[in-house]
Image (cartoon, rainbow, N blue to C red; front, side, top):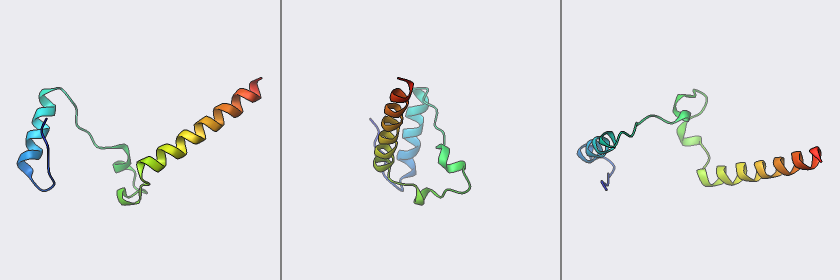
Length: 68
């Protein structure tokens, strides 16, 4: 495993080469291309996951009861 630290271009390049050798494609996240969202304003992933997970569970319960 290659550990990369911030600011060290050599380790970053080695990590990218290692992933390229494993045929892993490196791409930007979807949020980087949306002009109205700045990366520093995105909600913490744990909170986002919890909110979405709860919403999906609630909606699935509602749809199931509606279809019954």
